[in-house]
Image 1 (cartoon, rainbow, N blue to C red):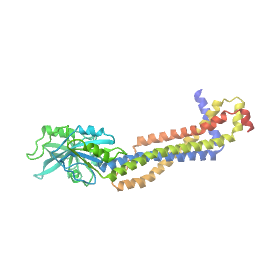
Image 2: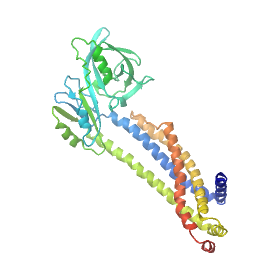
Image 3: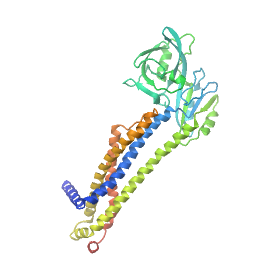
Image 4: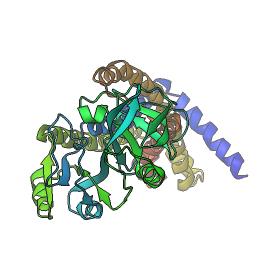
Length: 405
């Protein structure tokens, strides 16, 4: 019985909309423009945010914390330190992470080792890092094997010649090349080998070092440097002063311009939320105005229905069904329009990101489908909300007054 009534309401709603097809089409077009703006803004925000995360991570850390005696060469990006035997207590990472304004803290351990190339020993740098907390190594990953990383894998800097999947003899151990980084312009970084702390600990247990090279102790409680990324709005000077109070450490700040640009662009992305809300509000107001005009023309019809015994609740449901149908159709049209806009952005904005060496990362298909379904439901909701006030106002009036007006 309930299903039959729902079909009846839907059929009546479609018939009422069909009486003025041009007006219904104009209402659907209004909703389509609003939904297209929302769908495009939400999708682009997700894509730009993901791309910026990679791009700004490639610019390095905002601050670098190292032992006081460690030499740090200032480069365009704070990615690592020079190899040294001086280390810090790893517990400092937790202390720094708890400071106000700190977003991420990534520990690294830097070793200077030797490997045999063409029968001759050669000094190389080995950098141990934590993939779960890293934000300066993995963003540079350019190619990798088609499998998850595991213990015993190594990632190469851009200037290493070893091929993917090849075996590398290092510290008396055989490691498998899992990935390769892109060109950074930071010499020690581009020539280094990168392993996880777990792989470094395994190498320390069973390795056979050259007599004169730095040994791998594999201690998880010692690090060579801590790379710090600040939260949006945090001042590097304040954090630098707070960290410098810790004993036997020095703090090196990255380029202030990079930090400022990252913070400003993050604020701009956050402002798209307000733009989306305004687009939805404008669409709901437009639907409300148009339905006020529609119901003003149908006062006599609605009054007669009330006079012959129609319930006010059922009339209001009929009006809201009409609104939901026309705005849902407009929402589907808006998704098509938004898809076309995204293709245009792919050819312009996406090309620009690729030209500066930053991948433009679209959301995965599952997320796009979720956004599409959400926008379609929002369109129906906007129709119900926009038509709700005019429908309630009309159905509350006396039948005689509606017919007379």
